[in-house]
Image (tube, rainbow, N blue to C red; front, side):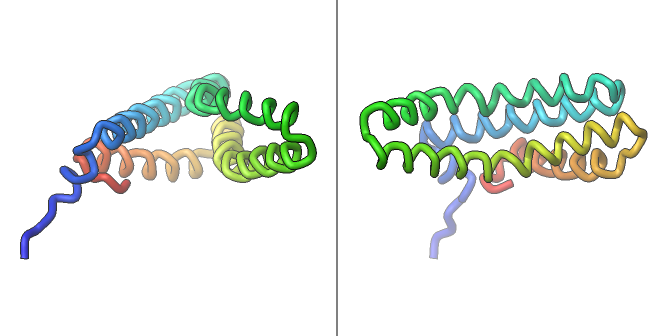
Length: 135
């Protein structure tokens, strides 16, 4: 039986390479935000704000689609827009509040959550830099 190199299979397509590159850049941005927030805890919220670019830019087309649904699809469009909005909040809220509590903890001198997040980010960064497709 022949062995399949999962890394080569995953990154062989253009979309796969782009997704891998975006994951790597986002993870590097998270590592940078943690490093700066640990150095200057008062600025932690500002470094955390740099991570929001990764969510706002891709959500612009989704927002335009939701507005189009609200204007043209009546009640069904309103329901679909509500489901998309609540679903998006359910996905983003845990991530947001974890970063919020990390920043607040650093301001008050508590580093346990930041160290835990730093371990997760560094292991994800090692996987992505090593070429492993699944961090």
